[in-house]
Figure 1: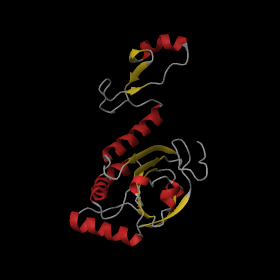
Figure 2: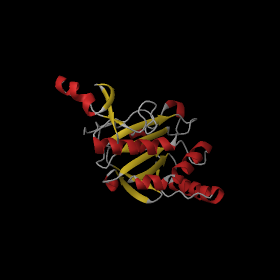
Figure 3: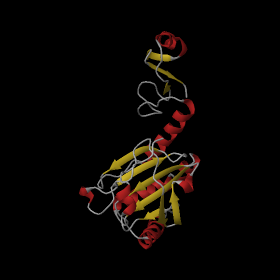
Figure 4: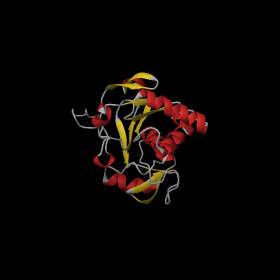
Length: 217
């Protein structure tokens, strides 16, 4: 795991920078308060906006799936706590959906600037960023969406499952897993490290060639 350089947002494989934040669930320290858990930190452009509302409802409806994966959700935008609270109340009152996860109040934009969530085209709003942080505090995935396009929340769930399987079995995960067009829900074994191992590869695993072998998960 690499340490993040000061003044630059964290990249894949780097340690997520320690920071104290104010949320709708009180003060939190990221990522230390969530050690031992996966964390999905996601930003949205602003409270009381239509696309963001659809995303929050989608995250909330999959909250139990995230919990089953030992994953916690944390939202963020450049709004004050009272705005977050009122918006969460509105979602519950008008749409019948409770928002069970905390939302960071980053009204001065310090967290958003540190994590690269502010882009010129978005003005003073945060883009739709996602940082997936593993139980050791390492950044495993970074996603960026523009303000006008909402995220696919099922993909966030899928990628956590994929990482957990990859970490457990030391394998690679194919495109569209578990519905890959070539190998279905199977997983890809690491490449051989010698000519001898390459020759034996297709005797041990299914595959198209020695460099493309797969196995059951």
